[in-house]
Length: 110
Image 1 (cartoon, rainbow, N blue to C red):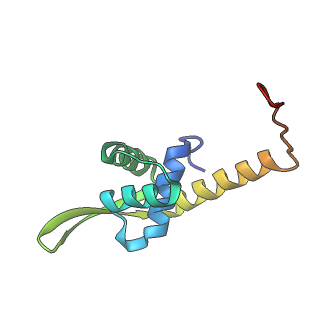
Image 2 (image 1 turned 90 degrees about the vertical axis):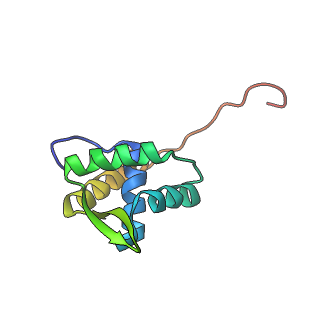
């Protein structure tokens, strides 16, 4: 992974949305993908701020394109972005490996 450290949770979600959308990854479509797959609403401002941060880290690359008279900024996952995602997945797997969590129940009926 790059010198910028670990990925935050939302950075991972945005990178995964970009990876899923392939050549069709632009701001609103990324936001909709997050909404549909993660079940969480993300503001378009938060998506673009995260994309800018990921671009600065070298994890996505942007290209401007005029589609149907509308200017759009498309994003693609870079090899460094893929490596960052794989590192995050591996870290999660190592942390969860062999872990059994027992939740103590409180209140009535426990």
